[in-house]
Length: 103
Image 1: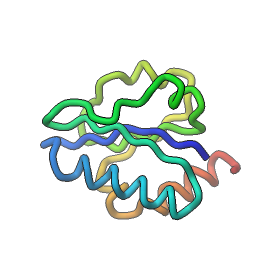
Image 2 (image 1 turned 45 degrees about the vertical axis):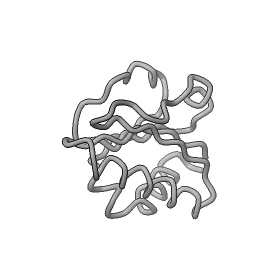
Image 3 (image 1 turned 180 degrees about the horizontal axis):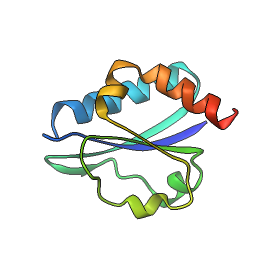
């Protein structure tokens, strides 16, 4: 699967980046391509391209706050979860998404 997403927490520091790393590591371990944008205290980093979004099978929004740019994901399968879910069980989340998508 091609997975893109956004990670953002209330303080925009630790959980944002932990969630990003957990998703990337879990996705890689499970054989998926994962690109995660962060929206933290220093702004947006690793901003997703329109091509990455258009070729994605699913968008994971791992956020505890409202993120900027949700309109970019119109017509995509979007899974929204708090950062705590991604931090605690990133492989479980990805496996569930894969199962739900029938892939």
